[in-house]
Length: 169
Image 1 (cartoon, rainbow, N blue to C red):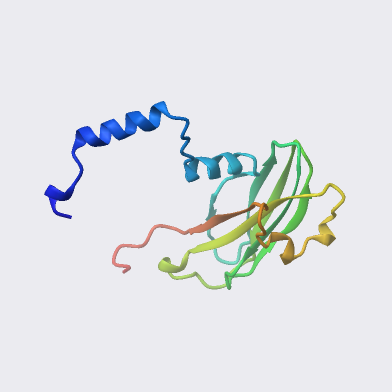
Image 2 (cartoon, rainbow, N blue to C red; image 1 turned 45 degrees about the vertical axis):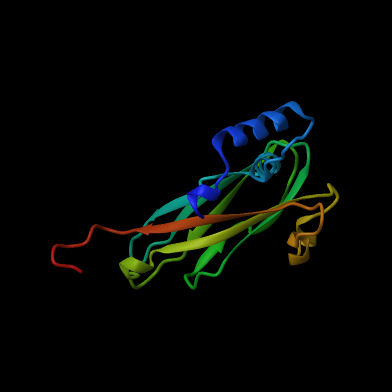
């Protein structure tokens, strides 16, 4: 844009002052999303570090916290080819409660390459009726419809191995 075509700073300030004095209310979309997400499940940690050792099973827990007065359904999944086991991959979290989910990497017989030591998990959650049970949790439950909020959070697993030996590339 040509600088000569830009509005004068005093015109901008004048327009802002007019908007400020009127009943116009501008809603910040990111602010609205943040308010909605504050009423979703708390998830700790978002990144887990597994101290990798050959032929050894490794586990880490994720704590889900429901500080609301609503029931939440959640499910955890991964597309990783590594042999992970999730002790509770879907469940209902009652109001004002916590739940611990354990993610376990089964023993590996071969060390993964250094550039392939990161896996992602998807944790989806949404408000549900208090009568729903874990067996009623299906993929359709997490389809976004108008007015329905589905929180989709990426959890990261990093396999921490021993430091590279001198001369390793």
